[in-house]
Image 1 (cartoon, rainbow, N blue to C red):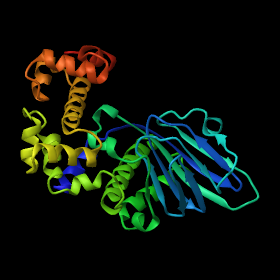
Image 2 (image 1 turned 135 degrees about the vertical axis):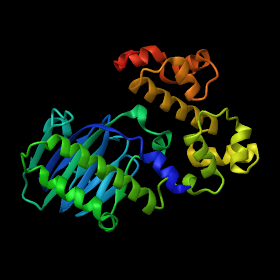
Image 3 (image 1 turned 45 degrees about the vertical axis):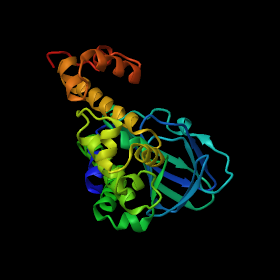
Image 4 (image 1 turned 90 degrees about the vertical axis):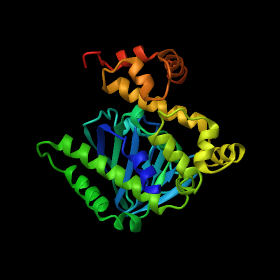
Length: 310
């Protein structure tokens, strides 16, 4: 059950592009990064640094990996209380497919980082993905316990120093692999990841699996509660506690995610898509989609350049 749900969380992620950079910073230093519309990854090759968010501060040592699934704003520094400069000043253009270099000179110890901005299709990400915390930190032992992850990060760091043909494609696939492996490792090895209790709960996990794999069925709260083997009130309360939202809203999120994917990648009619995502009529689907995305299905599709002829 847990493996199936992990697959549902991870499989839909499709990277559209990666901006990556190699950092060498000598103390004292501090960099403030604004929120990004992409996932972020920081891998410490040598030295150490602090990652500071409003709600927590994490120290990263050599071999540690920090992942920001939602591109949350944060600062990087060699020590607490450092004055910071904006990331945009160091790397003013961070277009997907490009490579950057950051060098900060100082008299103190050096820290070497591999950083990546991973642009993914948000409409293809599973609703479970939203439940991930702002940052996931894999200590060096956890990275070492995933040999493919460690090897991939090492090779990606080496690619930054080369100008080989096909570098952009290699970086895209390499970071995609590293990102999925990092999320899998974090979800299976870190006990404090919020979404894990739901994936492992003996009653909520079956209902979640039903929502994510059988979303086209005419589910009701009573039907999902029966899938979980709980009363409606107990199921609704437990689901909200573990997932942070009511079960029927999570179901709608899954349906809307699939609808957005079909509108973006196929030329299926709105009526066909409505049936595929669990709506009995195109009108009901149209209203639900507009309420969710503040856009009609037709406008959403036109923005993505998908015609009826594909």
